[in-house]
Length: 339
Image (tube, rainbow, N blue to C red; front, side, top):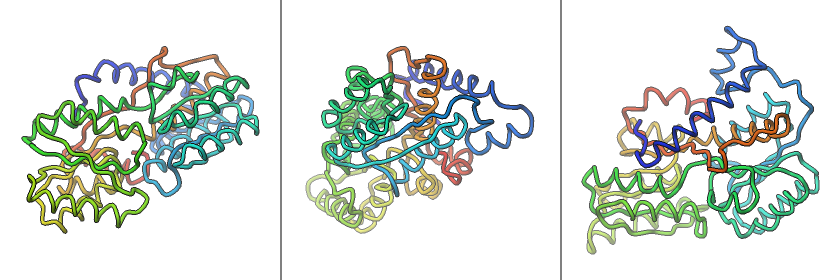
């Protein structure tokens, strides 16, 4: 597993923070075999003897999305450990996401976890939350907006650095022309990824917007682009920005009769299988389980011990590039939905 050198310092800091949180959480647990069993489930431990809390998470994607299923899994394990009532809602539209956040403010939750894919749409309602004394932790997207919006901290990967890591890897592999597939227009994180690829790649990059909520349509669009590329300069790699779109690109590649290498952001059980079968060259892991787990844990620590992690800087959970060589270590984790 290879981590981008530009992120090495910040990644190390993130790991130290994660370790510190793990140590704090471990203080209330028991040792021995029981602890080992709980650790094998991806976290957990003895429930905290602190007052019951209510924490809500509102994201721009949700149920049925393999990435966000993993985020939720991490949040739920932390919530069970921390004696937290965990609530979850999602909507890809910024206006509706803001309304969901407002509904949880009205319920007087003890903390909010919010993704900032469309930051301007939720800026005002996050201000309402902080004004009401409800601490907010942002995750996954929009890191640069987190502190200005008044959040305690941001947990996720730096999307520009992640994109540059991909661009550097494509250059190392000798690629010349990349197709970067954006599955949600207006999502600042996805745009940053493709921009990062373009910045660091020694070849050319062309973006393709697809209808991410319609997988057959997305597959057809990618296939048509690969087909048309044969007359305008053939694509030798496709970069998708979400795990489900890797499979769509593998199918599109076959339909177009293309030799393009498929690479993707994000990791799940299917991507690990595709890496093993060498249908995908590499994947970018941003550890979504950790994003959910640490966000809930931070809000619990903030309420019960006044802690704020990150020192005003984002807590990085990625990126790390994984290939078929990493499959043996990852298979058991992705099978249980924690990686």
